[in-house]
Length: 403
Image 1 (cartoon, rainbow, N blue to C red):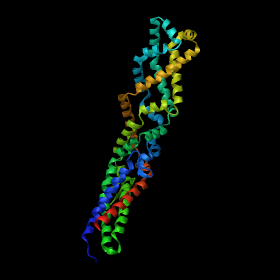
Image 2 (cartoon, one colour; image 1 turned 180 degrees about the vertical axis):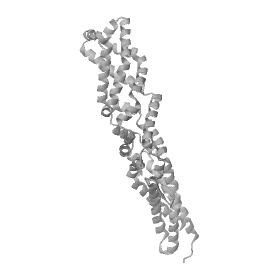
Image 3 (cartoon, rainbow, N blue to C red; image 1 turned 90 degrees about the vertical axis):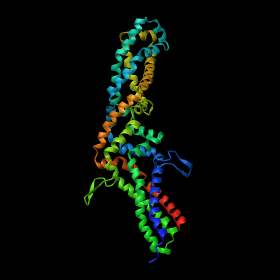
């Protein structure tokens, strides 16, 4: 047999280093950088950020949608609680609200001619009607929420604009799995380096290290990534071999992942603030404004009561219609500002989080795996090939340095 060169002992160690390095780089290249760096085609953007919109769509279809339908999420937020909060915030603003509306256009002369007790009576009537009007409005919004906002497109647009959110969602949920992916690279690489070392010894000069080590590096980089990914998600159901139970690492942490995942989703994605903003400014905002206009118009009519004919006679029907439009516009501005309350949003998010987490924990292993596995599978081949390419380069460097 050929003499055993001591330099060959470095092969398993360096193969382990290659496995660790390629896995670490592959994970980093999966998520960073958020934006393209370099000059095309010589540059790179993280796999997830580069396909943020597509991955967001997959995340909604396979994951978020399973945590609750849109009407259910609306009920989690509790329309009556939102109405109570709005009423509390808007009530002190009613005097200024009424006065500002009354001072516009031809209404100013009519308002100025009213004696102070009559003006106070109008303000008090608005305040009495406000709670009922707000509650009816919020119930109408909840009942028609699917017509007012496309949640799938909301999430896709949000992740498209804020790529850091989708990176944070997946990195946070799979943090332990990604750390395992990196750490396991060394041990899998070192293990695969042993037959590589024996082959180099037995082949002797028959195979040049400049060929053997780069090829082996490609195989190590590919195999360590592929094997680690399989251990993360497989087997889906617990299986026992020789008295030891095995299950995908990610699936074994279902309760822990549910807590982390739902926290991110409810605090950064499916938030009350995002829903309100989408309803007021999104593609279907005309429906929202029409609904608000109807309820604000009813509030104006109820507040004027028996004096409406006199007001209409004094300012004209067209001016009265403009009053409704102005009231709706101002009501939307004040309501949006009132709901942009961090404490209130956090309170609602906590309620939604509890409901979603309970659903996620109750999922079967197969359903749970189906939430995030499709997102990773989408670019799993790219991730593995990146590991293989990096392994080949590392193997070449090893051959040049040692042999």
